[in-house]
Image (cartoon, rainbow, N blue to C red; front, side):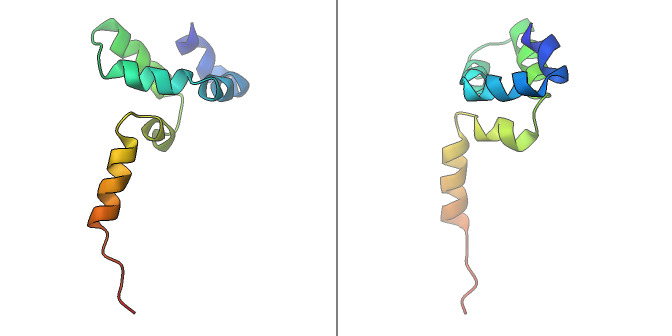
Length: 75
């Protein structure tokens, strides 16, 4: 149902994120496969990639890794 509704309804997309639905799908996506993965991909495609990445389980680890690797310019 969401995969059909979200592409056409901005308020539904916003509500899905605010209710924790997108985050839940990202967590679920790491443990499932098959047809469910296809539906999750369809829903993810309704959002900008950076939003999907933000709600992915490993996002905080990715940010911490970027901090570790960052070399600021010495002034």
